[in-house]
Image (cartoon, rainbow, N blue to C red; front, side):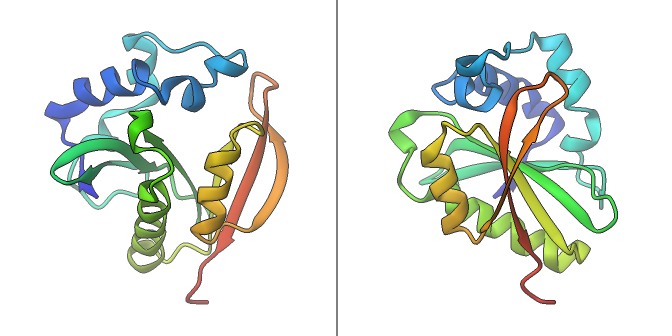
Length: 163
């Protein structure tokens, strides 16, 4: 994982909204809409791209053989709990363990640096490949949830392995 800098925000936007993973991440496949640039950067505030100690959130590139193949981030840490998001851009990089490895890395980072007690990730119920990857990374508690638009998700979580 390598932090995404402010100069690389455009790269992240283009790949998050125009890649094989877009429909799974934003849920266009399930009725969500893909955001335009203005909406995207309202959600992805500047602190996601700054090298500071940051409990509000941070984005990282997922690097494989020198190439940026995806993005993983954590969102605001609240009450020692945090949610993470991940996208692997190109389907040629899916089902190779890159997502599970990145989830394990960010989980260890959050547990060690910020002492979080619980980490969770929300996924569309039909994205069984992603669910398997998260379970492989130690996310074994499942529950159902809905977003603010009423779209169903599966929430997978893990407790801090050090507690």
